Image (cartoon, rainbow, N blue to C red; front, side, top):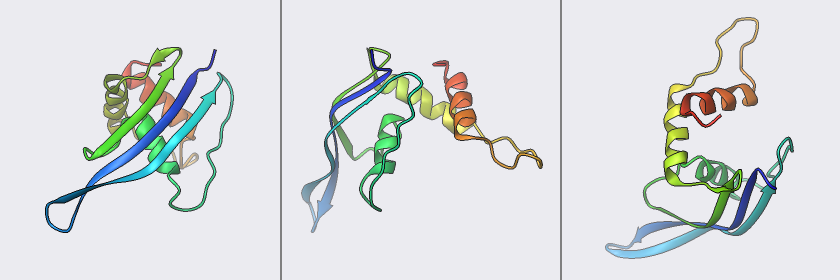
Length: 121
């Protein structure tokens, strides 16, 4: 079983163009991704290809004009906005360790702290 599974993920932004005309800007379309426990995955692409948007969407940190589609599961359960929102709240509370001998915490340590604060560890 996959720890994280993303199926057919799309991310679209609603925008206004010329007055009150609306348009949709699709920035990620049809993305599939599976990550097993203990697996390290790198998302690689050129500047502006949507890597950060994908990460932010998985954490529930997209702006209000974003429309997400597809299916995301974590540990076999749907990754619902409430869980993502708890993670976002925890992320806003977390900060890197400030130690002169260790100037920056690792990504893993920061992610673990955010998960601990959100109660999803």
